[in-house]
Length: 258
Image (tube, rainbow, N blue to C red; front, side, top):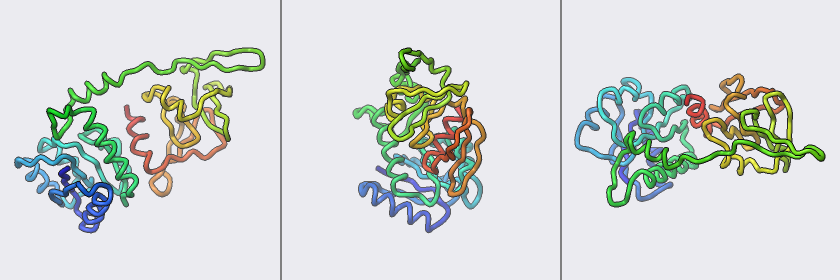
């Protein structure tokens, strides 16, 4: 796999190259470029990298300007020290968003995502280096499925049915998982959070941490928290402090922006 790095800090260039070699020794770093202008020139030449790692703040502007002046055919993984660009990043040719300092596990996860997308989009006999809107739409059609629309719970001798439209969020407490409705009622359900992740429509539900899965309508205030995390309040309110890890922040912001 041939990789282009667009990064204006020499140390960050070398650190990313080191981590890429650790994650996958077969990766070839084709070129390192440190400016918007040089990136545009390079991409307009007949170069076809398989993947681009792109810092957002470059010496002569934001890397988003590259997309305004030339066609970026390869998928992009953004790397930046600033989390405020996450939503904007996912509106261009991006498959992931890594906060600096880039961690090895986060990089491995991004590379796995790239590999999975490439397998889904690209037939082996017709390998391509980029993913166009038609291919993305094709994948979305393939992935359409029926998601859970209701839950059944037992209250004493009574069996109650709860539609997902009534759900605010789910949370785990020790080995028990609870469903909480928008009108503040709480029910025990016989599912794990891992199972619920597979059963719920990801357009409406998101696992914000190891303890909570929330519906988008239950999200209250969102505040920046130290170490590039987010602090979220839920409706109905909970006693727990709800934090979203820096690794999950890009996916969460993308989910919120859909």
